Image 1: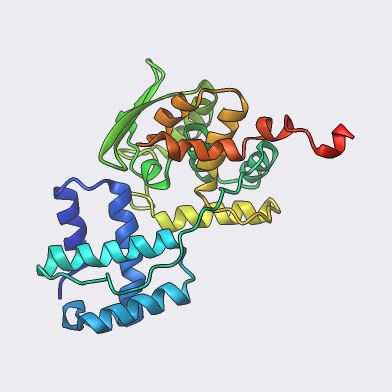
Image 2: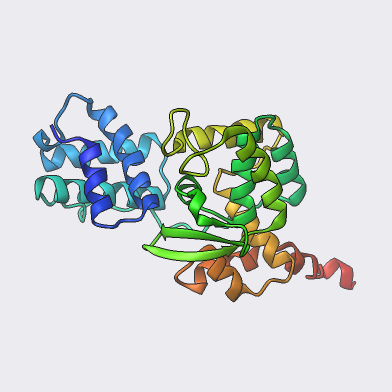
Length: 276
C-alpha cells in the first residue's frame, strides 16, 4: 500500500510549495480514514472514489474552495502514485461563493494574544499577524531566514513556488528574543516537541483556544490573522500594491477584496440618514 509519506516526498522533489503539500496531505488523511485506513485506495473503482468524495464534502460542509482542493489532491495522488486518472468532470461543483473575509479588530487581536500564557504560542500567533503569513509559511520558517541586522525575513518556496522578503519589525523582535531564549530552537523557528516542523493541527488548536479564551464569537479561523494584517495595513493607508507584494499575491484582484472591509473606507461613507 502506498503511503502519504511517499506522496509528500514526491511532491517535495517536484518543488510543490510546502503550503500546498501540507494542505493536500491534510485533506487526504481524513478522506482515507473515512474509507478505512487499511484499504488500499487503488483498489477502489472511480465510482467508489467519487462517492466517498461527495460524502466527505457533504459531511464536512466543505466550501467551494475546499471541495476544489480535495478533488485536486485526490487527482494528483492517483496520477503521481498510480499513474491513474480519476475523472471529476461529471460532478456538479458547489456554487461559487463570493464571501468577504471576517476581520478581527486590533482590540480583538490584543485579546487573543493576551489570552495565552505559553510564550511559544504567543510568539507563533504574533508572528503570523505581524508578517501576514499563511500558516504553512510560519511553520516552515527557519532561523536562517531571519536577518535581524538587515531587518528582513525571507519567506521561501511559498504558495506558487515564490520567494519573498518581508520587513522584520522591531516589535516582533522583542517577542521572538524572549521565545528563543526560553525554547532554543535549532533549525525551524517554531519546532515540534521532538524537533522538526510544528504540527499544523496543533497550531490551529492554539488559535482556537486563544480565540475561545478571549471570548471572540466571530466565525474566524487562524487565517483570519492574515486577513487582519492586510486590512489593518490598508486602514493605516498602505498602498494596495505594497500589500499585494507583502502577502505574495499573484493578482492584485485578490488583494483588492480588502478594500471592501477596510474600516477607514467604511467610516467615511455617509448614511443617507446623515444627509437628511
